[in-house]
Image 1 (cartoon, helix red, strand yellow):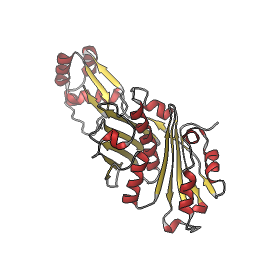
Image 2: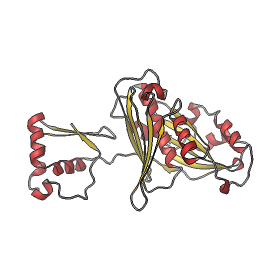
Image 3: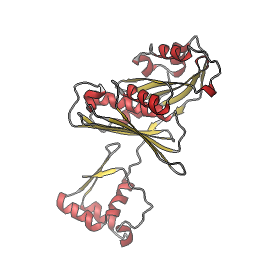
Image 4: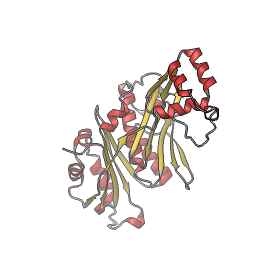
Length: 304
């Protein structure tokens, strides 16, 4: 039985190819637990979860990488965010259920994919915007790599009810190659094309790689865990309301009967009635009520 929720790097040394394998189990189940996603939306979101995790394996960063798709089709927003600490979160928003899971049908003809990297310190933030080309998320991300990174890259993604999984392979830069086999990249790509969704979702790393590359020289590195995690919490929504100030929050209570806050990344729901608000502001200094602490990070929430 394979380990659950793992990401693992490998080298196909005889082909001068590096790769990364991701299998999300509880991570994927937790990500969709709070929202009833229609099947085409869920399928695209699952591919994006895996693709963003695979993308994060190709760069060194201390912070977070966000893969975002915006369009004017039935799905108007998809966001997945991965941190260097091995956590991932994300969601999709749709106006209607797309007739099919291909990208042009789901997002519209003028959709864009945005990839951003936010470092905690020192490094400048990065953002790349490319047209959403191809039939699926794998095609779109391959286009990004070919145009932005100029490194031949292939992705193979699969989504089931309980698992989202995928493999990324990438041709090594010239200075890192050792075998210099002219057919190595083509051979590795063709071998990966034989992967089935069943194998991607259920086989352990060693079995999967042996099945694909049994005639090649492969080095498999130690697996790392990955998990679903969102930074929202009751404490952070408390801080947001304190930042708004007691008068503002009380006006919302008077108008709507309560304050509802839904996290933009995981759909977690927080609500406050008049008793909750009174308890929150009881004994809180006025400077805090007015949001004087500019160092507090704003929670990823939307007020309703």
